[in-house]
Amino acid sequence: MAEPGLFCQINTAASGPAETAKKHVPVITVQGDAKVGQPFAVTIKVGEAPHVMENGHFIQFVDLYCGHIYISRVDFTAELNKAEATLTIVLQHEGKRTLRAFSRCNLHGIWEGTKEVNVGK
Image (cartoon, rainbow, N blue to C red):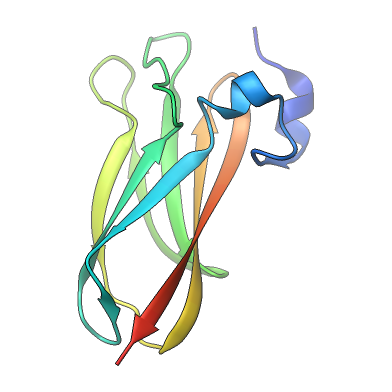
């Protein structure tokens, strides 16, 4: 059954129930060095513990942002996907940047995970 309170906000590891957060907060991993104008790989895995992908309970999508700038969305299908994706992205500005991933569970709402990335020359 859906938890209505979780649908009234963007949930984080700090704001949501710990057991629920463990399976819903996106974990962002950056592979290699981020350099201005150069592609690099970003992996988003939903939850530090695996989330089920059943017809009645699954992760519908993940969105990736750099700060407030939208980068991409990956949609998932129940039973046919694992809630994980690797994207190749390019950032155009040097310095510290915050990657923000949002996942949406059909029963537990939207969850946010972040990762600081230092974009070099």
